[in-house]
Image 1 (cartoon, helix red, strand yellow):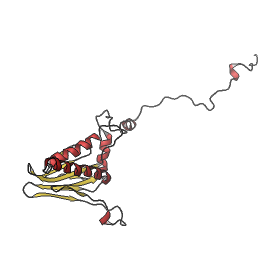
Image 2 (spheres, one colour):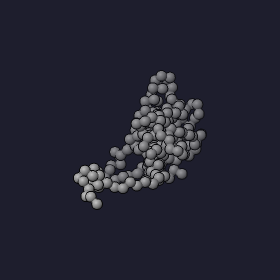
Image 3 (tube, rainbow, N blue to C red):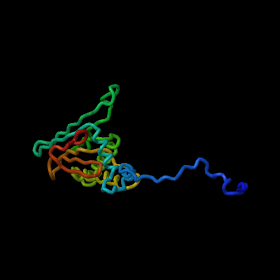
Image 4 (cartoon, rainbow, N blue to C red):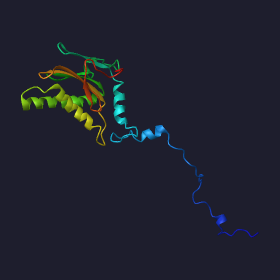
Length: 202
């Protein structure tokens, strides 16, 4: 046999050193598939779920519990569990769980307090604008609808995340008397006689 020439294909070095053999990849696992749909609030999963909204509700589940009790003739009572994250904090200077909105409306919050502060300020501003425009206090449910519209908007547009907070709104107006409502990060709300939010709210 003749020796191979220097220009023979047998002597051409591999241009890609340490080449690895080709292998076929296995199908993506269900958990990997789920991760494709939880990066944005505008993407539905194949099961019709919005994972970012569910994650916001999960964050609320780790917050202190709040509960309201409604009596149509006597009034509304709000109670909240205030968790102490450190014994070094002064209780008088830590964040609150109860917020006055107007003279006839108050609320309790569970979840991310910074998110709650934004929505509480929006609610207070809306109440004062209504009072200035119509010279009468804002109806409780109308104010709650405005807050929930803001919450829902943050689940529909890209580049935003849901507000990680739930509310208990308690108030009185001349249309429906004493009222108590609960809202969640998706923008849904509903009334009840003793709705809970926060940890162990089931």
